[in-house]
Image (cartoon, rainbow, N blue to C red; front, side, top):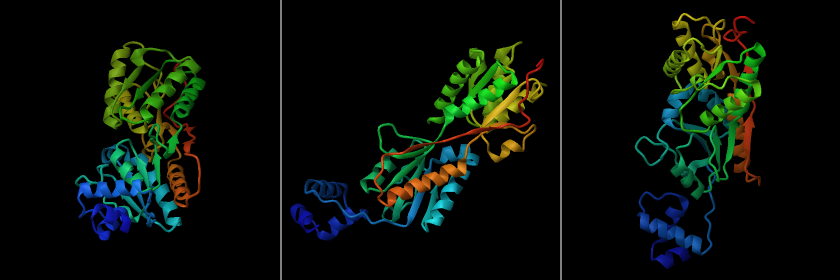
Length: 329
């Protein structure tokens, strides 16, 4: 610090504040000059390992899918408590410098668990301080960040196999619209299921909607209007909320579930077992995802050398009363 201070004509205290992360009273130009000089001279600050694990999710994403992510949060929080660390959750704006953004003190962060695609600036700040990161339900191409993912393609194909074994061939799919990885992966899974199980390839049987009950209701209504006299005998929805909305639209048309149309959701949120009829769905081990995220993070915090991990968690179909054989079988 003395050498850096002398070369730039600043105080040792200023250098100390920048290298320790306490930069509030230091100008951008001075901060940049100190970091560049430290890099040029080959110095690396010792990272102070805090006692807080940050869990950050985009607020809009959490509002849409809180029933799904709350169980992941629970799994992570339990594992963090076992390691005697503090757990700090934020479902706000991803940029920590924005009003209402994550109130994290970087000096006290041991690591961070991130959900969603909107954390680029926050990731850069974490990496500049060498704070370990794990992502959940999202991954960043070309970046070496440990990731916990749902096997979305396999999950949709399992749903397709369930319907094919019941005798369905005219199967529809309602996709989601969130900018992430789940929507395109599950849509790809349905394309794979069409080829594997001989489902009808009809553009009228594929829809898209926001990931909500109202979105599923409207998408299913449009699909039934387009299909005319040849509606699907079954529909797979992007998630359970969309599936529940689709069920409401089917019932409003005077059709019976599953006699006229079977319905399959994805995620197995608690609400899926409480609707009428109870919803067949693809179960995701949500608490396990949170636990694995925390375990992976603590492995990095301990400094254990490892190749970047991309862990796929398996899914399974939970059959309930919303699916059955098509009429005439």
